[in-house]
Amino acid sequence: MSDDRKDPVLAHIGIGSNLDDPRRQVINAIEMLDGLPGCHVLRQSSMYQSAPFGHVEQPDFINAVAVLETAVPADILLACLKEIERDRGRDPAAERWGPRIIDLDLLAYGDQVIDLPELQVPHPGIMERNFVLLPLREATPDLVIPGLGRVADIAVDEQSPPISKID
Figure (cartoon, rainbow, N blue to C red):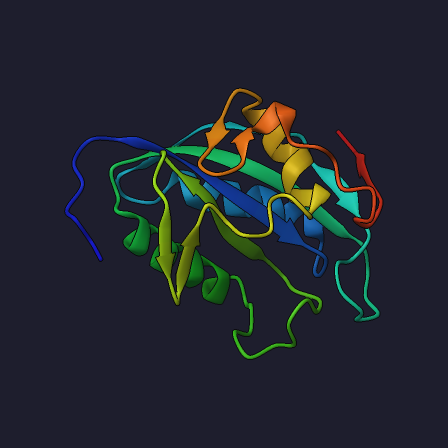
């Protein structure tokens, strides 16, 4: 899928952790994102604490969003995110929605819509996951997500697990 993109775009990365000092894991992930070749973190949201999504008994999550300026194509960026997860100790075979050291999701990539088996952009869970929506809204309220509209105008999901800003 790589199109050898040269012009920088804004990529929005969802970050979450609920194991092994989650706040530190989120901070380390943001530093690693900023260190990726062709990427620079422009801003990040506050950290938020949220109850787990899904039905697995586990600790609360710490979540944030980072906004990157990048010239890296979306598929290569996703591969970099997965490599960071592996480097931080995430088991790719772990239970879905289970506890994790780090979770990095490509939420939006410029104004692109990508629908591949391994990559969906915009991320399909934005609207029903307040732990994604609220940090994304804080970091870039005027972001327009294709098919969803302006982030500041997307309604909070009342059925989503509780979330609170922690810094």
